[in-house]
Image (cartoon, helix red, strand yellow):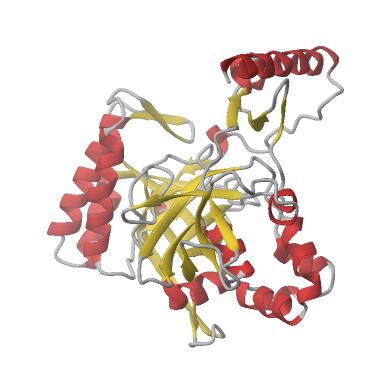
Length: 407
């Protein structure tokens, strides 16, 4: 294996050398917004109301779990808030102060005053540089499955393959810093990892002993990949918690956008419910549509989930996912948007104003740039209905304790 890996890395280096020297093998993408410009400090008159729609105790639990993440980091490590830099120790101090204010403030007015007096506020520039941020939702589905394949349970959930590697390109060429590829180790070369179609339609991973559990519904498997975590209730009564372990490195492509562009589902009616209804009514199109998204996700079994990208369990409506290149992982944030109120069938009854203090604890393949936030909304069908319809603009702020040394 080591010899094959060395040969594979050698072939990769040769390829990268050609790319770097000729400049024509790969078209490089440049970020339109740099992390330094992703958010800007808010002045005295631009601060939000800090009105929290939720009970404070789940927020205190989220903060407690967040200390576990921050405590694993070197205290002197730098975390960027736009153009400003703070240490991990300062971020921890910020949470400690906020926790004190949250528990001791007599009412909402005092909470708002104390937060405004003690914290610097940074606001995302949004997807349009006009501070508009698109909020979507995700959840933890509960599905039926089995530990054994059968005529009923025939769609496998795979664990992370041994031949999958992630290569940091910046280690080979400085101008590729921050970029990486996911690849497969072959006998004499490294190749792109198989796509969703290769795996689901071509059986690229069959017979390798990677199956964690088998599901009864192909759409359940697909949306498990989208959500990144799930709970499986087996036919023998076991409960299996699944969490994201890695992906095949292929680009995420939205099947919702595909259905809109094909005229299959009107844009104003697009939701997870609409996607499921269309594909259930048109099974002949299912594979073609699902395989459009080449990204494929691998899972691991955990005792309790879901677990965010920073390694702590998520709290419904208190944990958010953002682009970790743009915003501080483990940072304290405040959001303003609307959340759908849905009936038992997932139909939207109304949109309800929603504002809350949250913590940046996760990320996602489709969550890119300064104008995207995914809110974790919980587990089960009710959370799924809300998440599947969630698609609303709003505002995103980050809070950090004022530092007298900062100018």
